[in-house]
Length: 505
Ligand code: FAD
Image (cartoon, rainbow, N blue to C red; front, side):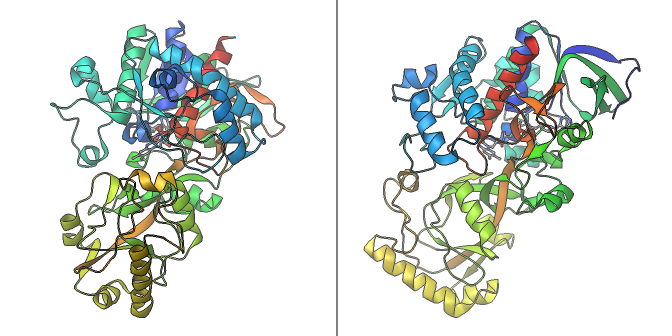
């Protein structure tokens, strides 16, 4: 832990570690309220996984849903969350629901921030579900509005991995628009100091209160004072093989979607050293992924054709399940897993981030092509008899249009990507293909235990003065459930906002 009593290199009211959606929303709440605020970002650019995201935001019962006329309300969201999660985290749920409309009003009052409803079904068939969801997204942001600041925002996944910046001719969309808009708003306050290549390494604790942080920079260590509080919103530990192994998080650090290997749980480790307690450490926001030619994963959802088999060559789940649920089925089954498809369906999912192309995947050897199922089995090592029997059974179900085995196509979510059809397309037109599917994730979701105001709790459930956490640095109030599109970002922003309100009291 950082030594007490030494001098400070810089002094702030609020220090925020990380620059994802929660961090940036918290920083805006602080800076716009007149608090001198620092945003510390470990990498060269802002936004982390939030910048890669689709930036769906699940904050129910706000002005955005009201404008869209979809009939959403805090009551129906409460019914839905209760049905899925129970009442174990009821205080957090109520704080989240109470804050959602206030947070959106606060954000939309800023000239830099505008949202619109985006249809995307909630993920579970439960009371209170909205068939077309209740999440919203930021409007695209013309790069000119950001000017030189555009270079500070993490580019889209494919361009970022190739070492390229934003496209000069296209607006920033999705997660980039969200981070860009929050950055513009923070910048306009004149109270925000955004420091990239600055990694939180430790907390300074004086008389039982967190009073600042130690940070590693290119110019050496810095000791930064935080008069009101430190908000830890520096992602989870998805990129740490050691912590994943220790905590039993399924999947591999190399298969996470988080960028640059940066989310290694630094903020969680620093807080634990200061007496913080943790929860839910074996959990992540899971998804199926396919490995791209560079060996990095692509997040995939909305399979419109093909079928997924396990290492024994058998189906084991409804391939159209929402991605976190499919990820959990992958974690429970025995791999390796393959999406089997044919020339007709082309097998490609509706959404793949970054986009994947069949020819490129096959040419790189990531995906296998063969003229027959037996040939495919020989090349992938799958048992030929079982694979052939599985595909024949699947084709029979496809002919009937009913998945008697796994009920694919029965839930509105399944039909969202397939134009209302069940997505049961026979696999009988050679050549055949096998795409290896891995268990990927959008970040771990266990971490520091907090109260409903984002205050980090010690082992005796007492808040540690001056210390707050949000996003994947904190244990999610949703437990092992991913209720709907935009919960990671919506809850990160809500609890970061609440943390800053608490600091201001
Ligand atoms: P991040 O956004 O990863 O931010 C953490 C930041 O902290 C990073 O920039 C990192 O470099 C930095 N950092 C790490 N360590 C330190 C340190 N020691 N000091 C300083 N900085 C540090 N969720 C949704 O809600 N809606 C969606 O539409 C959605 N779509 C997605 C689409 C894709 C393709 C992906 C990959 C994810 C998606 N998600 C979505 C999930 C969501 O993006 C993440 O779970 C969430 O954004 C994580 O937020 P975070 O702030 O906890 O972490």
